Image 1: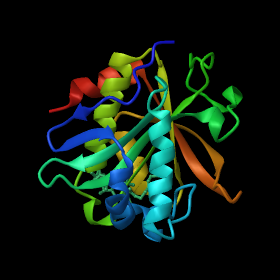
Image 2: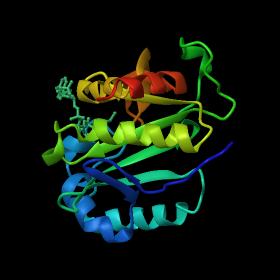
Image 3: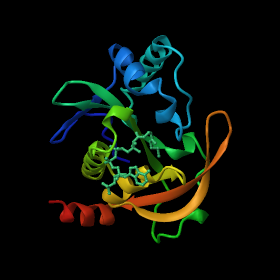
Length: 205
Ligand SMILES: CC(C)(COP(=O)(O)OP(=O)(O)OC[C@H]1O[C@@H](n2cnc3c(N)ncnc32)[C@H](O)[C@@H]1OP(=O)(O)O)[C@@H](O)C(=O)NCCC(=O)NCCS
């Protein structure tokens, strides 16, 4: 399968680039320390910036892998890094279960790829994640052979569902995901096929 790794992506307002350990203070300050940001994520807020730095040092080791996708989200106007965006082989977190899906024709030969994203509260509701998700989907469908992308959000986190819908994702079924501490969370599961992506792209103004 053709992969492209984490290359820089530019949009009107954003720069998506690799994270480095030097981003630790901003990542800790802007989103990783905030329980409101992590409320619907798998991980807990970081207790200190050193933990953030250690995580970023571990991620730095993974960037040479062509199937490793992990972007910093940077506001071009200020240069501030305010969030992160990942694309993961779902088998890493949850069992892939093709039988749950209703959309016909989804290919599970190369696992199931799922997006994950978060930004600091000060940047919410300005259209930033819709802009980032659309740009990453453009990149994935142009630069890789991944045929479709999964995404899910907690039922109590509808803002994330709005972002998915804006990027052309189609609701498929409800499921459970598990926080890293094992807590199950009911979620709504969506998919974006290459075909649906092209359709959404054609409607952008
Ligand atoms: C969810 C999150 C990624 C959204 O990012 P964002 O940049 O604020 O998203 P956008 O501004 O592009 O779009 C947000 C949409 O949700 C809507 N929205 C916001 N709060 C809402 C709520 N409580 N209920 C329903 N819709 C809501 C907004 O009106 C907007 O929709 P619209 O454009 O149709 O009006 C961001 O809030 C976040 O990082 N949250 C913490 C981490 C997280 O939950 N990640 C997702 C895990 S699945």
